[in-house]
Image 1 (cartoon, rainbow over the protein chains, first blue to last red):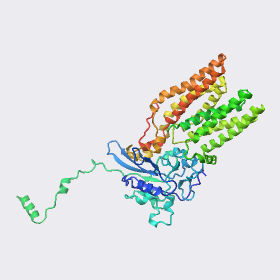
Image 2: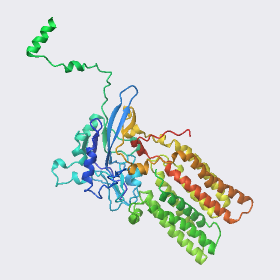
Image 3: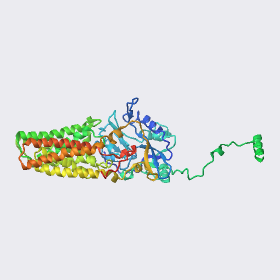
Image 4: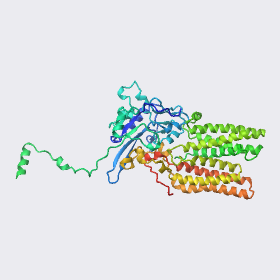
Length: 247
Length: 301
C-alpha cells in the first residue's frame, strides 16, 4: 500500500557527522559489497572495466566546499543515502505499491517483485536517494541494512548498517531517532543536527551534524615552527651550548 | 529531465486521442457510418499507441498491470485506471454508434468526462512533483487539458472551438514559460539547503561522487539542448498554435476543403511534440544541486 502509515514511535535512521567524515568512500564500498549479494537484485555495474563505468549504488559521497566572504574555504565530505523521510514523497507516487514505508520502524523499502521500474519515485525524491538498476529494471535504495540490523545470525556488534559498521572515522551513527533519549537523538540535540532541504516538507529521519566552525589561520598567533624543531641540548652538548652562550 | 521519446509520444498522442474523445463523446461532429468509424479509430488509436509507448520506458513492463492498484494515493495509478475505463466506455459508445447507429448522449458524456479526467491525471503525474519546480505549477494541468481539447477540436474539424482554444493555449503556454523561469528560485531550495551548509557560506561541488554519469545524472540532470530552448519555443509555438489558428480563422471566413483542417491538426501535433520535448528538457530537478547544477535565475529571460 503506497499510502504512508501513521507516524511510528520508532524511527530508525542514521546520523552523519560532516565534521568527522574524511571522504574515504569506505562506506560506499561496504554498502555495495553487503547489498550486492544481499537484499533483492544485485547492484549491477555496467561497463565496469570500460571507459564510462556506471552502476547502482545506495550510498554516494559528494565533496563540497563552503566559503564565506573573507574566511577560509571549508571542505565538507558529504555522504548521501536514503533519509527514510516521514513524509516520503517516493512512497505515495508509486503506482504499484512496491514502494512502502514500514509502520514498525519507519524504514522505506522497495518490494522488487512488484516494482515495474517506472522511475517516478526517483523523480519524486529531492535527494537522489533512489537509483534504477539498469540490469534488473527495478528501483534500488538504501534498506538501512534491514537484513543486518534484525539478523540474529550475526554477532550483536554487526547488527548495524554496513556503512556504519565500516566507517573508520566514526562519522556514521545508527539508532532510533524517535526515542529522544537514544544516543543518536542526544547527539543530534548536542550538535544541532539538521535536516536536508527542510523546505521540501519531506521530514527526513536521517540527520546531519554540521561541521564545527573552523578557526581562521589569521586569528591565531603565528607558531614558530623552527623553534619547535630545535633539539633540546643535553649533557656535554648542553654544557657547551650554555658555555658558548655566555661568551 | 531526460526527454524520453516514449514519454513524449505517450503524452502527445494519448493527449490528442483523449481530447478527441471528449468532442466525440459530446456529440461533435455529427457523423455516422464510415465517418464515425474513422473518427473513433483515430481517437482510440492515438490513445492506445500513446499508452503502449508509455510502457516502453518501464524496466519491467510485464508487471504493468500492478500499476492499477494504488489509485487511492498515486496519480500514475489513477491515470492507468482512468485510461482503461475511458477506453472501455468510449469503445462501447463507439460500437453502438458505428454499427447500430445509436449515439447515446448519456454514455458519450460519461466517456467525455472520463477522457478529460484521464488527461488531468496524466498532467498531475508531473504537476505533483515538488522536486521539479517548473512542473509543480497550477498551469501544468490546465495546459495539458487545453492541448488535448485544442488538438481534439482540430481533428474533429471544429474551426471556431479550435481557434478559441488555440489562442487560450498559446497565451497560457507563454505565461507558463515566463513563470516557469523563476519557479526554481521560488522553491527555496539551493545547494546550501541541500547540503545543510546554509551557515557555512556559499557552497560549490569540489569532487563528484563518481567519474562517469549515473542514472540520476542521465535521467534528471539532463541539460543538453537547453541553449536551443528559445528557438524550439518559437518553432513549437508557430507549428502548434499560430499556423493551425490561422487555418481555423480562414476556415471560419471562407469554406476550406476538410483536409486543410486535418493538415492543420498534423502541424499542431508536430508543434506539440516540440513543446513537449522542451517540457521535459527544460525542467530542472532539485537533485542537480548535489551535482553542482545551480540553476541561473532566468526570470529576466
